Length: 488
Image (cartoon, rainbow, N blue to C red; front, side, top):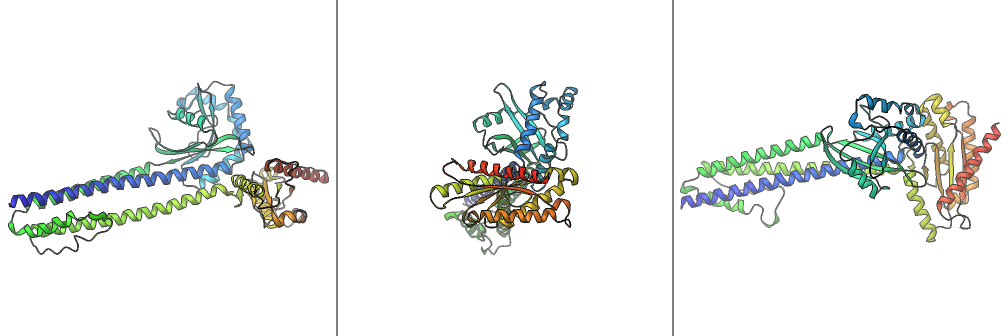
């Protein structure tokens, strides 16, 4: 009879402990890995969106066309020949591109995003997909360490997989993917398209984030949990096999009932069942009781730690969401960017078609002499010029949304009072800009000059908002020509 009680007690405790420990280890490992994977994927996707929205598509197009011109007329040497004489000769063909102003501008814009994001590197490449040969050609790599050179053709095994997915979804890029390579280890990568004003894909902004450190931490955590579970299991088994005396029947029954009901009726989380158990025993049963209390405390501490980890990952997810929101904000000026403009103009068009607004207009502003300022005083002063003209635009059109759609171009969507008062606002804008330009007390890069033009939707001549945009752009250009003629 004593042997029967011993066996029942041992079986219940050991099975309960094994199941609980195994479930905790399995669930925690899966949950932590999934949360970490989701966080890293969201960070990579957000960074790619911001990079694609932050660069000037016209400059990217110029770089791409120059690279493809060389690529099309030369023998293809892939990155698998990195360091070879043939590879160096092939890369020398692209040497002149490094000195192009467009390349310097795009590299600067990418590093602004890269420096502000928790990513390994951001780069741009073009996908040359021909069926027989799928080449991913690097255009700009913002990595500070060892960037892939211009024109480098990637030769990794997953290139064909990426090519197949891009053929199916050329306008959306690739969703974040976690891979493991011999060279880089665990890596989350994705790409998002860089589109021009006609919504055509020029190239792809890509982001890489190393997951080696987080994977190492996860593996160490799992190993520690397994070791702890084995130790607890061994202690409990040793105590159980020591119980042979009839005087332990009642304490064992209490412990057995407590263990059997521990997870009953969906109970979970922090528990105090064993802590509240009153067993007066100074022998092995007392040791077993204290061991169960310690196990419960360890489990409670683990649950608390897991909850803290969940909260930390939740905070990281909120941060990731904030980064995603940055995809609609210009990193330099703080106003909304080209991606946000496309979304806003769709909403305005729908509002007009549904009769919620009577009309709408578009104003185009183009900063003059930006290249001269960049070349003369440097990009930092050029950035100040951009922010100065942006402040003026926001001050004058303070009731309308302002967007930076290019390096030196801004768009204002005109509705309601700003649309009715456009002529007054236009004159006021020119007056303010003229005061800045003629103020000799300001630094040269703050004495900004700009051209402006606008157009109001006319259903007789405009089919879409793009037509209004084109007329506003043409009027802006006419103003720029008139200013030039006046200066001459």
